[in-house]
Amino acid sequence: MTELEHEALRGLLGAWALRACPTDEAAELERHFDACPDCAEEGARLRHAAGRLAPDDPLDRPDGLRQQVLDFCLSRRAPELPLAPWVGPYAAETAKLDALLRDLGRSEWQETVELPWHGGVLRRNPAEVVCHLAAVDGLLAATLGLPDPVEPSATEILARVPAQARSSYEPWGHLVERSDRLADSRAGLSPDTVRTLWRQQSLAVIRTVQPDSAGLVRYGPGAELPVRDAFVDRAFECWIHGEDVARAVDYPYAGPAPQHLRQMVDLAARMLPTVLAGLRTAAYAGTAGRPRPAARLLKLVIEGPAAGEWLIPLDAERHPEPEPDAEPVAELVMDGIEFCQLAAAHRDPDRLPVGEYGDRAAIREVLTAVPLLSRP
Amino acid sequence: MTAPDWDQQMRSRLARGEESALGELYDQLSPLVHGLAGRILADETAAAQLTREVFGHLWAHPEEFDPAERSLRSWIGELTHQRAVQRLRRTALDAEEISDRVAAAQVQYVVAALPPTLRQTIETAWSDGRTYQETARQLGISEQVAKQRLRLGLQLLASELEFGS
Image 1: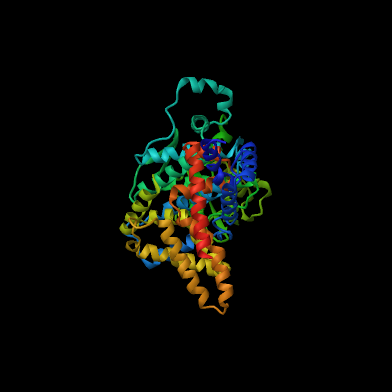
Image 2 (image 1 turned 90 degrees about the horizontal axis):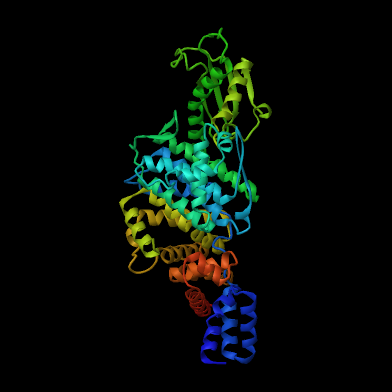
């Protein structure tokens, strides 16, 4: 054996000790051990050291620990540059999803994730789900003056998506297109790189936003959210899709912290009147004698850790400001997590355990409307 | 961003009192801190308490960490290790049990203190069972460099472990 060949084999010792050599190279090195006590000895020593490697954290970090640690730190020293309270849910949910993605093994990145929304079910692998989140987060990034990760749409790419397939996602077809375009452009990258790109974008967004950041995030025609609501919306979608991924790979996934969940419930409750108005417009389209009931209110009572009460105007398109002393026509009582799952179209409104008091029809109307808040 | 740049920036952001930096710090280093605390203390409540204490200390005194001297991982690893051992000494455990626990945690502490490029290469190969060729592709380095780093990293690890026990 030449010195050069010997050096080549010696160079493999670290990889061999970690069992990171292809079988044929490992076999060749092991044959060499018989003839070379030096290499055999170093091999044994390195393999012994490698055998002591252990994963960073033998315990699962308890669900609430992140928030606990941050709260403790902030109580010891108040931040000179605090985060706006409405950034909290996004910061926590993106961190939680990142931790899940870091744990995924190679085969788990190949799983198919089901992403239900009220118009159907999208099926994507985890990397494509991450691109979907990054593509829609990109709208928020752009509003804050950060780069949009999605290349401007090129006609030849659009032409590959059959028009029929696009229309089945309406009115959100353009969001699905954005996501698939980003996933296409990142298809050659490793899942870990796709994760890192999404994570870097979400961290940049958190670093850039200021408590007084203004502007509207345009999800589509007529669908705009102020920056502060968009942060809560993005946190909500990150939680729901994180849970979709976790379900596909059979991992547990915790719900949001109570103060974050509460902001998500609040956003959904505030968006409901528009959806209700849309529902009614559709129901009465073409009929001449449209009934004009008095302005009604429904009291939504959320139980559980995010407990609270919301008054939902049911006829906001005609009565934007309900009478201050108006009595609710009905009361709907449900758990906060379940309400959010319903808003993500991850629950069947007819099979949800809820408390109902008063006008049954008004309650049905609301339960039917809530899943319409979901997007693909 | 390279690891030393990240450390440097993190320290400035912590010193400026950026709340967003605190979250990033936790996400990056809590597996190490909580893991070390858990291994030494073998108690979930105590590990959570110590994790709070260590991050609370760094957030309150970011100036104590000097990026010119060492990496943030190795600094926070040592702080966690020290405080965990102090806590153990206050319990009724006998000295032998304490030294067993500390030895079990030692490998993590040693890995945390390895130069970042060596640590990253070992972890990439080890954690997902990649070959050195796949590790090289994953990290965007040549196969030759990947092999060198794995060997050098394990040599350092072996010396530290032999020296420590």
